[in-house]
Picture 1 (cartoon, protein in one colour):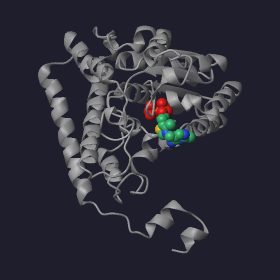
Picture 2 (picture 1 turned 90 degrees about the vertical axis):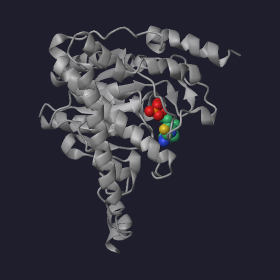
Picture 3 (picture 1 turned 180 degrees about the vertical axis):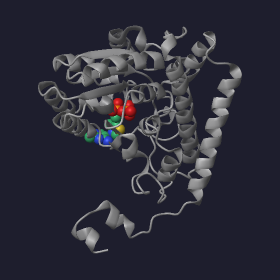
Picture 4 (picture 1 turned 135 degrees about the vertical axis):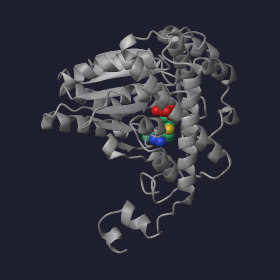
Length: 359
Ligand SMILES: Cc1ncc(C[n+]2csc(CCOP(=O)(O)OP(=O)(O)O)c2C)c(N)n1
């Protein structure tokens, strides 16, 4: 039987150099007209990083008790795609969606209160990290059942099509979700009915603790889009400029009425599947890989590239980090003083009908 390492190497070949963190260290190809958006994107990625590091610290201290899946290291897909979401679009995520929530403009306080179970949280303290919602910013829900929001996104896309309002739906999911039947049914229906939905797979190679090489005969998931006759694009998911470029094209096609599009954004998560640790605690041997991927950090890579074209200087970059820390510390501190929901709200808010009416 082939060794795990040889399986990983064989499967990596389909993604080419994108699968190897030893590549893509050179400055990003930045379109001068995109500089302003990239600067805003850099700030947003820094905010996401700082919020998630705070959550990670609080999980490690036992203060945050709900399961938290951190997207540290994979901020660029969320920020790049969110920058093309407009009013009226409906976005859906999964268990690792702090990044999607914040990228769309969600409030750090709402998220930090939610992970503490406070009444002021975005799900009024009833959802925790994995059930986020922020309708004013277009986030219609994140659900931890793998693949569960993909058909809902297709339904939202169908609604947009029937309304004829030019809106689209966006479905964020991981490579693990492509192993669910519902993913294939959703893709089929979307293709058949030309539904305006953007499927975004953040391929970080892992589903819980299993590498994709041990789960699929190929490490790239674009072949599924091809099978359903959906046009796809693949990009370095740690390169905000590249993510923006593929998203721009896909969204233009969707809004022009061409039906669904599929993006595979290759990235890596720095932390473990759940919690603040890096995964070694559960026997996943990825120390060398992790160290290499940290060199392909989407934040520092973009910052260096912007500095090289004189669109950013050290002082401004430092300020971005300082501002993010101030926002996060203030939000955290406010959230810690907020109250918990009353116990009876558990029934009246989570259930409707007879159960709720009893209370
Ligand atoms: C239907 C279902 N099966 C299994 C699980 C357990 N589970 C939670 S997250 C996860 C891994 C999902 O991996 P992926 O979709 O690649 O997302 P990532 O964690 O990499 O962001 C699994 C198997 C679940 N929540 N739902």
